[in-house]
Image 1 (cartoon, rainbow, N blue to C red):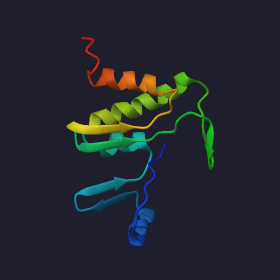
Image 2 (spheres, rainbow, N blue to C red):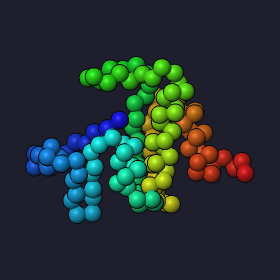
Image 3 (cartoon, helix red, strand yellow):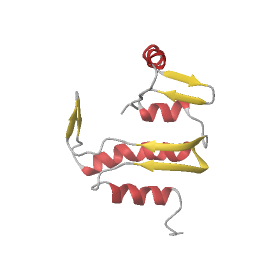
Amino acid sequence: MAFRSFFASEQTRKTMMSSNYYQDGEHTIIHGDSLDVLRHHIADKSVDLVFLDPPYNIGKKFSEFQDKWNSQEQYLNWIYPVIDECIRVLKPQGTLYLMASTQAMPYVDIFIREKMGLLGLG
């Protein structure tokens, strides 16, 4: 799933059209497959804010992409590695925002709490 990025200036849009990498002083935007970008371009504990808005697995059609997996299990098996990478790149005092469908949120919530040690289970 690719990150979608929108910019105010026409020059910035032209820069992104010719490159998947945009850097402006201290800010960097990388346009590409989220899992690939997270794994190969972003260092551990280097991000202050992660805003993850993945497909919701509710069947909505976006151009050529159908937002539907064959099962909830397949969807969770797809999203869990992305969440793992988001947690890996997040600074210790960083913030993670994740949008999810009401059907997936209980699973995603428990997964994140386990990964971040917030359940107090051990």
